[in-house]
Image (cartoon, rainbow, N blue to C red; front, side):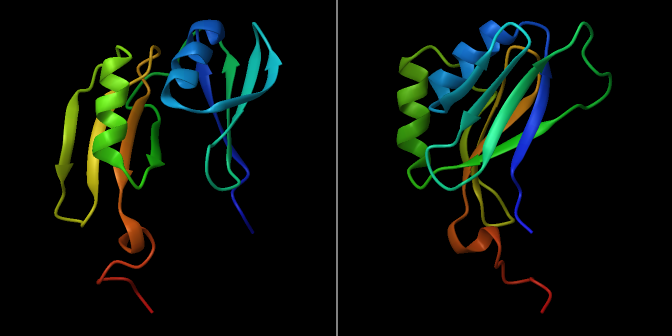
Length: 125
């Protein structure tokens, strides 16, 4: 089994599309204003956004995107006007993370974990 895609809700799919294109995702399905789908620059996963009239309540969704050059990515995104809630920081779980939010309040974590993503020292065998 392999993860195909994640779909998130948005009040304004057109604005969300521009935001995620700025992050570096490639638009592969354009059914604006109700739906779009992106391909990640690396790997095989896709990511889609669908139109809703009302966003879900609660903590919502957290999206994780890994990049081998996290600090450079963050600096480049800041130059493009992307604001971060937390700049890159080393975590106790051996990941380096930067946090931000999309226009609908979905939390995004840009990170680098390398081998620790799937094989941390505490992995169960």
